[in-house]
Image (tube, rainbow, N blue to C red; front, side, top):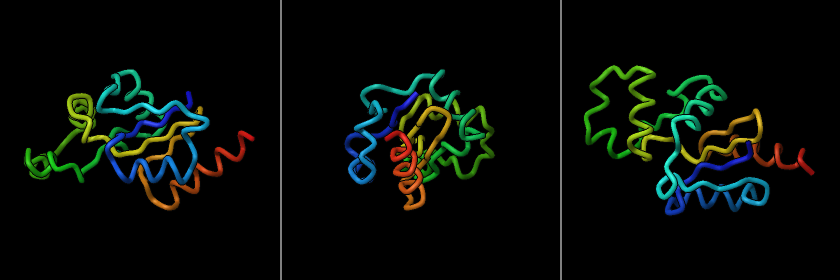
Length: 119
């Protein structure tokens, strides 16, 4: 599977896509207009090692729903990400058995390196 899970309205996602040129070798899935499926999320969690690695505590709804006050389990995080796309860290880039989560410089460098290996 080669796919980028992103949000088309997110400036950071667009910057990472442009910077890494990952849309040239990956299918891009806008998680707002084409929500992530349970099977996709489970696959991402297996690659990442946990649902927590994919869960965004920066989401405005995280604060609005007072989730900081709760001890969220892996299952809670899974359910929240399936119900509300804003709880998914983004972008998430998958190259076969590799996963890159977020927009850090190191993550973008990893994506670029994986793309170069495809050439």
